[in-house]
Length: 493
Image 1 (cartoon, helix red, strand yellow):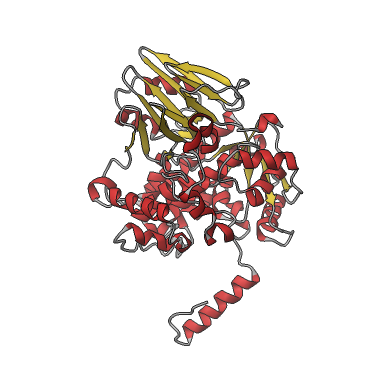
Image 2 (cartoon, rainbow, N blue to C red):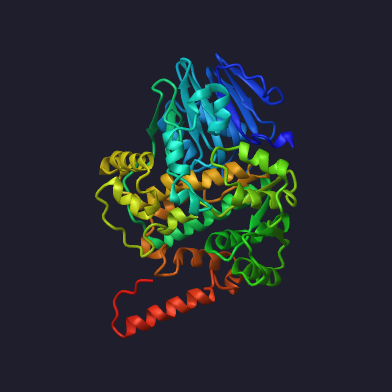
């Protein structure tokens, strides 16, 4: 299982590394770039600019455009703002290294799903996909100290299987994380925000629906033409809307549902996909992720990330490993929540006075100082209109702080079993969603944007209810309605 160690990860360092001799290598002045053999990589030298693409990238408006053609557009862009314009419409999961005569710039994909950590050590910038790999270069800078123990000893960490902390920070004081919508400049050794960069407006729903739905399907079709895609289906909206875009190419794809956490055939995330399969005749299967994890697999899984969720995501990954083919790429509906008013499901954005107000969206973070500091700093740098351009703060909070950490970590850990394709990981697509009136993309109107898109492409996708309530949920909702009718304004459960 040695090929699974740090699978699909990378390290850029000036330090001599002796135990990555079977990895791909490239010399960049004083640095050496080490790349795991299974991480897709493209190189371009154009005039005096050298570009390295780690991961996958595509243009949904031009399916035949190659990676090298995309890199050439970036190479001729004279500054970071122009590079950002090129990246705006592109999809993928990647890190870009753009080296010119005087400096090197580092960009990642829209939601930062290709993890990127860095530090300044021994007079030079050192970069890796995650801290345990970076430790090979920076040694004691990755040491369990106050930050690490404050998080791992917290009640939040102990009682939440999918625990996470904000993007843009790490468990180590001298190790940094590149947040979404920022690039890293080797000259200043600092992150620079490059998006948002235009005034926020709420656009006409009809034209926005058309643009959003067509772009989402273009991304999916472009991906199906380049990769061996398999879509995970649940009872939820995110996988359902992506399923609706698959109709023209469904014969070239496969579909699956993960069975984990004591699910059974009565669980809605199993029952609904099975019913959809009967109606829509998909190449669908259930993947059993309740297997006893192989000890060797578990050991490598834990060593591949300092935030390893072995007792949950690790067990699921092991189940996936027994089924997925080597070249198969999993489609995930993640990042979609950013456009669904995730932190204000009513569609009415609350007033936020400080970064500490953000703790209310995960109260178990209270008292973990490095998390509180990150939220305060993030809010303070974004609160002015000239920086946020009028975008709803909680939408940016979900995008940059949540998705750029929680989902990034999940995909990093699952690199051990497959590469991931996330159609919603596209800045133009998310921007189009955010510029739609929240009433069309929030819970009270049952996410009308999603329903209208599904009805446009494949109405049968809605032949089964989305997230049908469990008996417990149905009883709770019924009690609330009864209490409301008899005049009880608030029901505390």
